[in-house]
Image 1 (cartoon, rainbow, N blue to C red):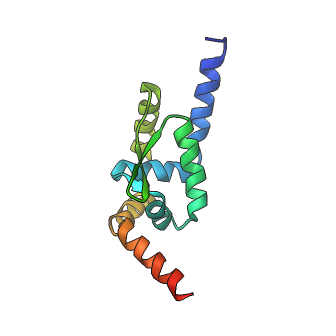
Image 2: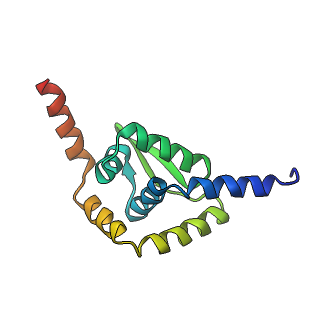
Length: 126
């Protein structure tokens, strides 16, 4: 391994989980696997924004995805012990925040099938 490579990787991973939106995504994915539309609905952000953040988390080894029917489902999937330990620390602290509890409660009422049906009706009415 090239000198300093471990430090560079660690720095990238820490940067990836230092973003508030990414912390919220990790928090929601700790509750259950979700598609981008569910995460966007829970956070009130656009799907492209969520996808961009998820891609960064995937690159750094914090999440994985799998295609299920028409959806891509993301889940926590730390690929290394380092990532697993970092996620554990972040989630323990994040769960102390009132907003975290509110986000988890909001996610409970969101189902991808309902979002897809609502979006289809909106598109059909235009």
